[in-house]
Length: 346
Ligand SMILES: [Zn+2]
Ligand SMILES: [Zn+2]
Image 1 (cartoon, rainbow, N blue to C red):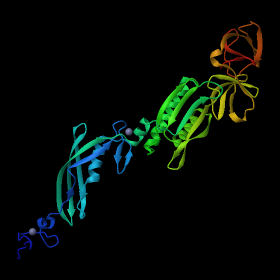
Image 2 (cartoon, rainbow, N blue to C red; image 1 turned 180 degrees about the horizontal axis):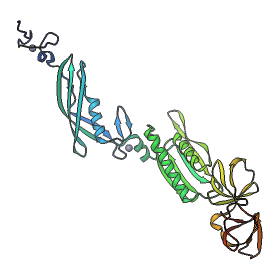
Image 3 (cartoon, rainbow, N blue to C red; image 1 turned 90 degrees about the vertical axis):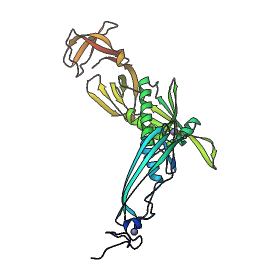
Image 4 (tube, helix red, strand yellow; image 1 turned 90 degrees about the horizontal axis):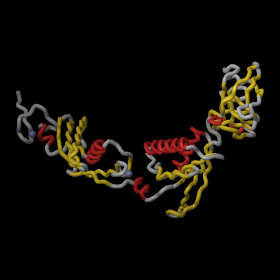
């Protein structure tokens, strides 16, 4: 039997790679290379990270550290079946010690390597935060209501919707999808938005929930790189009527349940459900509110009509019997007095 020895170092060997023993084959091939100190840029205000040439959304800090090391690692070109283990350990608020281990194969020869790197966080204000602190905005969403003042509850919901829309747009990578500031006014609220696109998205999302409409008007504010620079005012109008309003709509008297593209509610005369396209209504007017209802005595029930005692004049008034009425003669019911007469509340 012939003894097999490495022609390069002369040692006995069982397996050969490129005609030499595994030690000679691997020689000074470096499986892993990495600078000893790396820097990772993170925004101290919002946690955004600077990655592959641009700022992107905040993520788990150790994820940031791991990808910072991954991006800087150089692996031997011929290596395959690489298994990498990167273990970051926080040293202090802005330094991580990272241990890297790799096992791989180079032309079937098993190799392994390990090294230690330090990642230092350099705290830098991101593009978005520096825009916000510089007072940058591209549009104003003016939240108002048609023919009335918006309620505090409505404004609160509008602000929440706007915030959610901004977060979702940021998650999709829109760095300008921020709300720079919110101003509370007697007549509503003004939302200063980082981009025209976001302003439009906010208007649409609010209208989806409340109904209403919006219009845009551009205002030239200057020039940048030879291009006209506009700011857009979005005049958003919440619908005139809200839940609990009693309105006259084309001759009917309706207690509103919702009002947007459609008005829905109860026809107080018949007790039937009412739903109509808002724009199809010719004449709409507010008569009263559910809160303005007062107690009154149901004098008699004639089946198709009822008699109610007017709580102010004490006169007996005959009106149609609404479907929802369940009270009996002599009972107290709630009625609302309007310019169109007395109506029983459901
Ligand atoms: Zn050898
Ligand atoms: Zn930031």
